[in-house]
Structures are given as C-alpha cells and as structure tokens.
Image 1 (tube, rainbow, N blue to C red):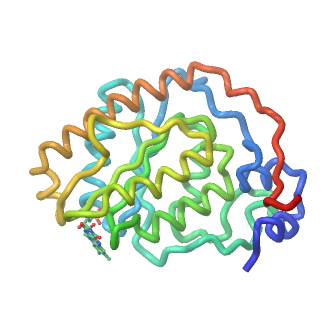
Image 2: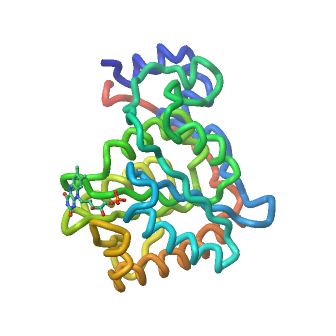
Length: 242
Ligand SMILES: Cc1cc2nc3c(=O)[nH]c(=O)nc-3n(C[C@H](O)[C@H](O)[C@H](O)COP(=O)(O)O)c2cc1C
C-alpha cells in the first residue's frame, strides 16, 4: 500500500504542480473566477440510482440555482462498478490529470470542473456514511484534480430513510476543507428523507432546506467568483518526521 511519500515518488513529479495538487500541497490551477460572466455549479449524484432520492434533492437545489441565474448540471456518478483510488500515480505520471479508471463520472467531472464555480456532492446514506461510490470518486477527484476545486464554494447533501445523515455530511465535507472550499449551508443540515423519490417529495422540510441551500449557494458562487484567488503562501509537507 503506497503512502503519500511513495505516491509522490511514483508520480515522479515531486516538484510538479499536478502532484502537489493531488496531495493537497498546492492548487494546480487558480480557482476559476467566473470569467464567462455566468457561474456554473456541478451537482454530483453519488447514488447508483440515477433518478432516485439523492437526485430528487439535488434537482431542487439545481432549480433554485437556475432561478438565481446560476447554471446547474447534475452529473450521475454511475451505476456500475465503483472504484477506490488505486494510489497508482497515473493521474500525475501520465500528465493528463485524469484518473486511470474511466468507468464512472470522475474524468467527466475533472473536465467540467475547470469551468465550474461551485459544487454539490450528494449521497444516499449507507450504514451511516456516504456511498462507497461517492467516496471513491471524491478521493480520486481530489488526488487527480484537487486544484480545480480549490477556493470554490461547495455543499454536501445526504438522503436517508431515517438516520446517519450528519455523519455522511461530515465525511463529504472533509474533502471540502482539505481542498480549501468554503462550505455552504442551509437553515438546517442538508438532508432529505425517503426510500423513494415520491417520499422525498413529501418531505416538506427537506425540500425547503434544499431550496434555501440553492439560494445560499448561488450567492456564494457569485461572490467568490468575483474575488481574485487567495494568495498562495509557502507550505511544508513534513509527515510529522523531524
Ligand atoms: C446499502 C444500503 C445501506 C443503507 N443504509 C442506511 C442507513 O444507514 N440509514 C438510513 O436511514 N438509510 C439507509 N439506507 C437507505 C437509503 O439511504 C435511502 O433509501 C436513500 O434515500 C436512497 O437514496 P437514492 O435513491 O438516491 O439511492 C441504505 C440503503 C442501502 C442500499
């Protein structure tokens, strides 16, 4: 199992921007600043169900974003086999900045992330945590192209039958904090409840949370897109070895 140091060595690019970005050392690219004039948010559905409960919640957020003049695109992570990061270093070694696994939405998201100013990652709750599908995708996205996320507002959304949403949101949000992404919230935690889309549509409070989240996210992406990227200060990677 490769540790971070092995990973850098394998990547053969200890000084390279991509390797640095993947390891959270430095952003590969400055955050896009909304140069097109219109902001765009990518909403990633981490459920195997393309049009299930998570999608239903994300659709409400997307609707509100669009109403506020922000483009919204929902991307399905996929329904087939899901992949964890293999720590193979392909994304750096190849110079593509893409993941070696091509069977889910990871590389599509990487391509679109450059022109996006905000992100929503949604997941069903599986045994009190996000789907392995979404976690694998987010790990690979952060490793291959974390710099494309840096500085851009993000929100997590969880859909559950009953319990586990808060832990799920916490886990998703860890990717936001290591990638310097401002976290956007609503008037309650970003959760809906149901086992089927029809049930989610009856969750009045959940839907209202999603609407407010969309409105707050629209404001955040517009505000951050108008700002210059944060100053990059010198960093060190010590692995606690002195
Ligand atoms: C493997 C698995 C584990 C689940 N674990 C939980 C759980 O811990 N808590 C819960 O409330 N619901 C749990 N559920 C139910 C889903 O979270 C819930 O139906 C969700 O809204 C489905 O979203 P989707 O339609 O987008 O896939 C589980 C479902 C599956 C398939």
